[in-house]
Length: 379
View 1 (cartoon, rainbow, N blue to C red):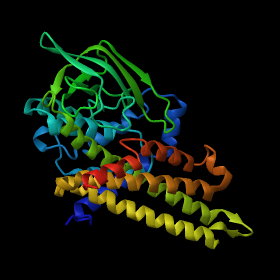
View 2 (cartoon, helix red, strand yellow):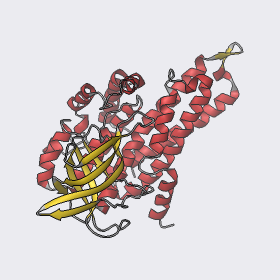
View 3 (tube, rainbow, N blue to C red):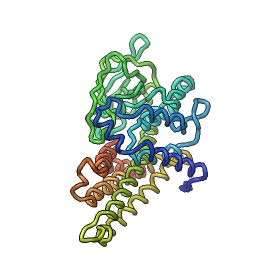
View 4 (cartoon, helix red, strand yellow):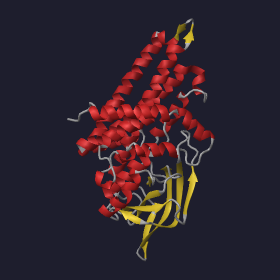
């Protein structure tokens, strides 16, 4: 049985994370980065503070410079910073990068790479998605060819999270087989300034850092894991990244709900707050139920990583399908609660709707996740 209640340490972590997020992670900062067209699209000073708090090392083993708490603790942090739409590359570096190395790397690679993730001195991400993959985790036309003892990469990757601010990129490439085969995949580390690597920054609606990549004879620094056998590793990494994204989205969804409720308590029409109207109260009650359901499934999925990894694939799929629809519903209703002003940049609710749409399209949408859940269950 997965335990959903916070213990004392987790309660204290949640309190600290919430306090930090309320001070440093607010939509105002996201607007400032967006309006300044900041190429990093995050704040290095905030990233440094997160590292000093131990947040970047929370799930990394102690012998590799980590704190070694657990994935549930990472989810608590992500929920807190998600409430303020913090753009720091936590999921990219800690999960897409860190978990790939923890799950697939050799002892020497873990010793060399994980401490730099834990202290924030290096930022990792994973380039796995291609066009037209339709969320497939193993569709891959990017090739890796061995020449004189070095692996050379050629191909294209799309929607690579935080590619513009990463120091290291883990690229999924094919060493053999056809584009849709599970066999024949490898994960290769390249540096962000590698010769032959071309980045096309994306102007995404949520103002987060992402890019398309073109690789032309890019020389890999090393292979992470066994060459040709990376499909299972990718499943484990992307399941955990999906759960991490759900935790962040949960925080954002809860905040979107909160600010919408506050607005209808304050907005006066016909000499009374519009929150006194029964129709809006019913809609608010429905949203509250959706938020709590999303919270339960997300907590269960995050804790399964630590307590029962065999449940992770199904719970990750169920959580993402639930969060996608709930977050979009809460954000859209929030726009309705605000009325016409809800679509203006002056009000935060529009930023949460934009984030909800991006979350829904990341790591597989609700329909894809339902299909994966049904497949895992044998339907």
